[in-house]
Image 1 (cartoon, helix red, strand yellow):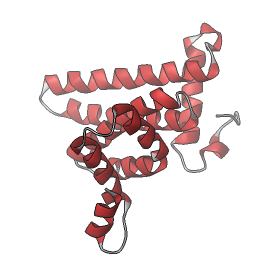
Image 2: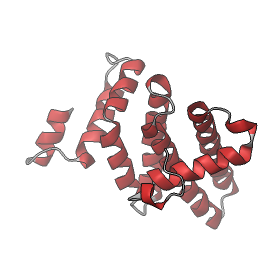
Image 3: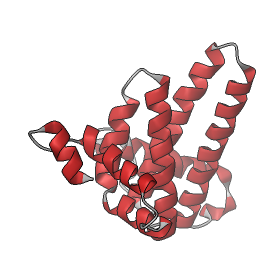
Image 4: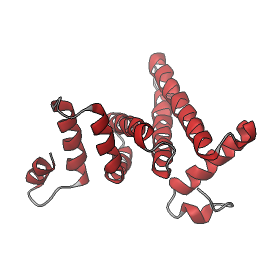
Length: 172
């Protein structure tokens, strides 16, 4: 797949070509088990994150939905082999942001089923964030407000350039 991406670009592989080629290879062969695919996605998580962020920056709902699909694959990969890691939390915040944008856009439309679907997605990502924070930091005193504060803190650090310096508490 990487060779195909390189040939397509004639000057070297780019993020725009490599990630789709990897996913195409996963979809086209039965020789790579689901578990192996998950480990490979995690090993390329930095590449995937850059690609998803790039897709998220486009205005097209189709591109953004595709970014969410890839983020979902990456999330389940992290659950399998590196649950509650910093990278996992980062992809969860990214997927939450993507689903929030899709939900906001669907509310402006006239299709109630689309709004219901995006609300379900938003709730799913919120719950995944909550669970991951509780796995990483413990029950946080059983107080949902503490979980929310931890989620806000990690989002500030992970989704902003120089986010570490924007925080009151220096932890992640």
